[in-house]
Length: 102
Image (cartoon, rainbow, N blue to C red; front, top):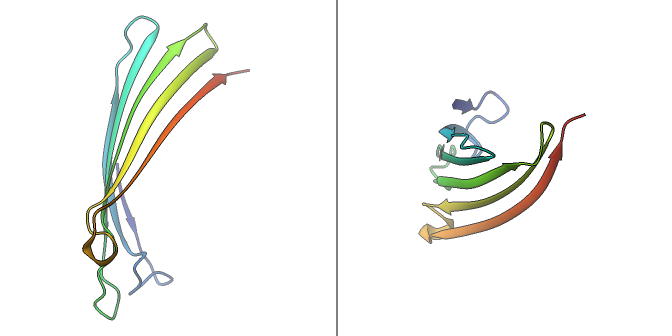
């Protein structure tokens, strides 16, 4: 996936930039492991200030309980490669859930 975010409203702001990423999943019986990776590249603002670029990872596992019901777990990590004042900042999250399609 590629996304370019910009336009007149974001021109010369730290919100302007692009994202590139992808994901894979493979079903093995009732299990489906998943992996996603995204790279966010933000442009400099009009004053020459550099924005935070980041690399995002997500690793998950789905388990099918039936035709319409799935439980899932996912671990995600955000790595700000150019964090505030060039410090490396990270954020982690773990989620679990249940999905049912009606």
